[in-house]
Image (cartoon, rainbow, N blue to C red; front, top):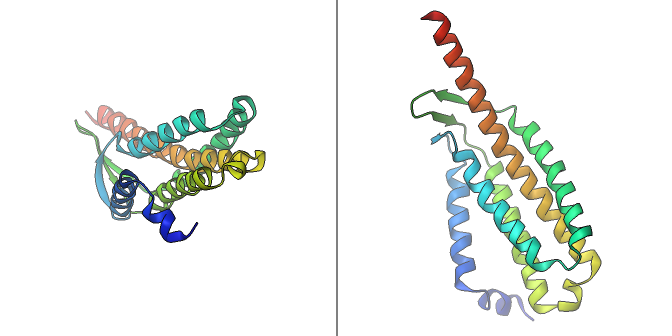
Length: 177
């Protein structure tokens, strides 16, 4: 199977999804104002995609599920630690407006999740024996868990930082009133 046949055989909806995530990822590279919950939106979408893929594709749910959760947790911790260093500001609202710096991290994580799904989808479609080997299944599981954990941990940490800034602001405002 050639690269051209793989690319031309890819369903149109996959290319539309790629266009959407590239758009969202590039948008995240610039400073922007978002709602308080916006840092959770794309990580939640990618997490649900990973979870449904995991539930649909993996034949040994006990082992792969445990491995997926473990790598999700490790990725979440690392993503949270990295995001805790971000310099964010808020306008406490209502509604709360979050001022976020631009970052290539979201773009890279979205792309990593997409490419993981795409590559393993191609392997599944073209090499079913390889796709069902324990090594391939475990590698797919670990990559999905790690990348989604990084993305989700980062989103949760940004949300937590924003809530912390909001509480600090409201507390200081209460003491000055």
